[in-house]
Length: 305
Image (cartoon, rainbow, N blue to C red; front, side, top):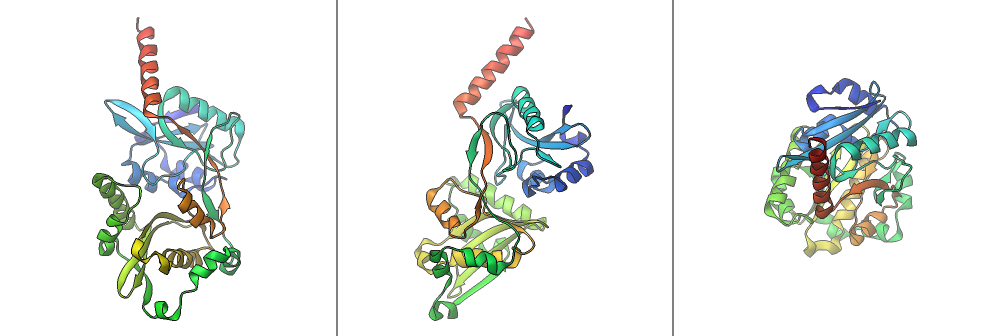
């Protein structure tokens, strides 16, 4: 019922049709998104004739193929016309038996017979902007009311990534190593070149103090990064530009905050009153990954004795 297809074996027309018509549709499972984030290092598990699909990205370490979600790819999982626990269980069993898994995130609609670790995401679904704004927390509404002096010196506009490359690099949280910063910036640049990414910046007194990176396709606007000058945090520019992007998109697209396990960021996102959407993951430590490797080699040694 389930077969694994290598990248060159995938019928991308059938894959994309299954994804776009699925109950669980996620922008991050699209061919373009995965090609950019994984460097085309992904395969697909297929149920029958593309009735359900499951993209599986991987890396290679010491000659071993290890399953892991690439940078900026929050959720993948199983995509089908209707989410089905029995079918999902088949995919999960196939994945675990046939692969070494470091980290794999399913999507928020995938359900399984056995419990998996859960992580948080936050979504605002398509609806009139005024309805969305009315639900903002009192604190968030206050943050959006800029005084006249600030308004007179402020500007919100979309800018090319190259224009604020240094600002984003200097204010990137979660990427301490220079090589990691360069990797994230290159992904942003690749998305921008492909026509999917916009950078919206808040300027105060002609200086950028906040910026957000948003991935856009026909159905979703996803917040891939927020970058803030801490010296100007009281001006609330980050709240203003997120609200600005929501106002431009929410009547036709889902706004995806991409979640966070950092309490302060989670609290910030919750101020926009999004819906909580938990998604299941398989997460193994490096030590557990080593045990998987030993187990696989022991099994192969036993077979070939």
